Length: 332
Image (cartoon, rainbow, N blue to C red; front, side, top):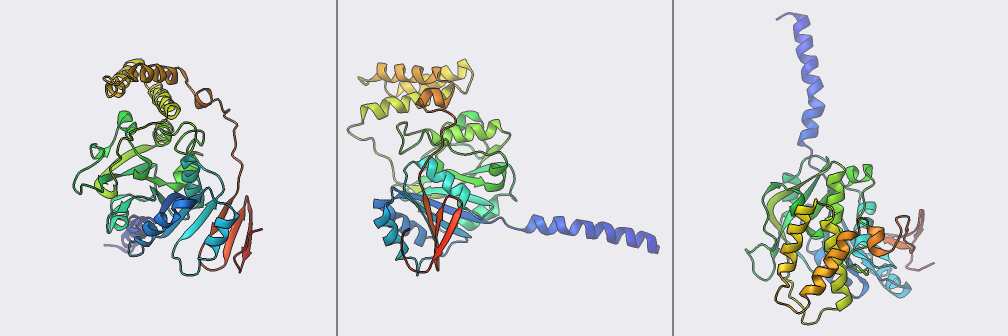
């Protein structure tokens, strides 16, 4: 082999090195735990359970905070291994958006304060997911009360539109950069903590797919959640709005599929006294083609309220885009 050929081969090999190194790099991961002020100890237990996991950042997002709560939280930051975002407002969609905005990792896994994360789950996620791309991954949810059972049966791999209607936000592992590129966020007008307390993750995923993203089931149970018991008494207004959100979700599909979804959802209420009411509200939601029509809140709606961001060492309090560092716990 001549000198010229040897130089060309060496140049080709060198050009491949960066790509080979990049392919071996594991993505970074943030676990974001959503809670409210009177349950933040539960979230702290979940955060402490992650201390031996391969996680790059732990965020605890505490909503419904007042000055007293923030003062208390700021006074307990010395020995913590996680960051706190203290939010004065309420809404699970808002909490998920804060998680997306505050993470410094490639991916953010959004969970709640009543979950049990499987040992080595974070390391397993890093092995299974690819370098940051346009894919949203779903971790399967096991039943915390019956280990071995799965709460939402679903096929492994890329999932279709209909399966997006069954996803739960504690399953979502979101590629932060790609979501930022598309300016994709949870709609804060719906979801737990609002007057329309359901469906925020389903609409988020449907919007993501419509913007060219894919949704992939990892095929492994990485998180467990308590079995949700049907309450003996359901707030009538909340129940009606839940059915309206389901109808609005069905409107994202063609009439035949929407009709099939309606039949499937309403069949569970067929022998109940409120069957007709459920069908009526489902149809009402189906006619609302946009969220602003459904909720009566315009698309230009922007939330007010402050978030205080606290982490190890000196407390950082974030007011909008302005950051103030304070060495002693205090509120301004």
